Image 1 (cartoon, each protein chain N blue to C red):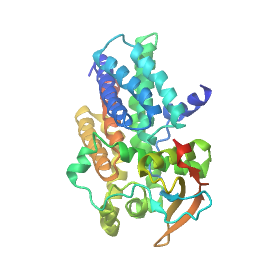
Image 2: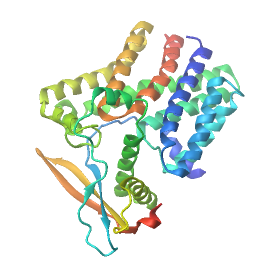
Image 3: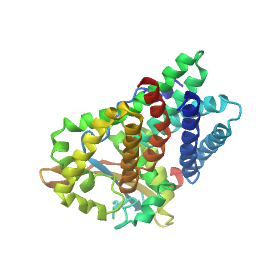
Image 4: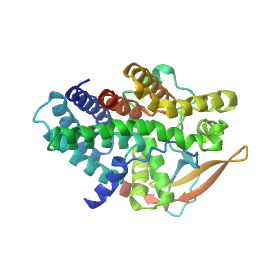
Length: 141
Length: 226
């Protein structure tokens, strides 16, 4: 309960520093593996955004936007994994990838990595800052 | 707007916003569903005005369990405003006198003003925001644009510069709208349009509904103070 109250305090005394600086931005990539010791190839981006979204779809998301909000939650988990690593953040990412990517009996193992995009001068750079150990998918949920 | 009307409007609007969020969670992980079903049911009781203030107290207690479940707010700033509104409404109802009830509810209105003022302040001291570079970065590589097509906006530096200054000046000028009720109403319409744009471009739908829910608090506070 004390922990919950400590999590509540920043809401009761907020800082409101929205977008004060644009830092490195995480992308979650995952790979399905036939065995725990197999090389994780290919890496796939988790929930890549669509090429185009109509205005009607954007307005529809005002009232129904669960996938996008879950994706933003995973961005928070990815940032937490860098700032204050916990098993909770890693578990959440594993669980939500596993629920989303569908089954493949020949590839019962799953791992993910976090790629951070940032700007150096005028160039956008990609850095892999975290890679999980593979987990058996049957154990993830 | 009377104190009672403002409190009631905030309660109803916040409950509707929380029901919208709760329904989204019902398609999520099984462990989340019970928490959010309970939250939706309590929100319904708040809207119906049944057994006040206990449904609000229940929602406040439930918010602690939800914070624990996700190790923090599920969706950052929007959830923080929702929590602030919920706890201010709950504590206001539990205060022993009208004066204290007004202080607690007024704090919510004050935080709404600060949410714009501070967000504008931290941007304008950053040279990247003043040059439009920061907003280009948001569109170019941040996780927020809802489609790849929107990333092309980063290739229009003049538009990014104009949008950056429009956002910063609006946020910084927002406290001036408190000087009169008609000006405040105009300010809130502009603010709601800003949140609508953020919802469309960046998928931040929770901000739109949560900030809207708090507008009665600032309308009441303006009337009370000026």
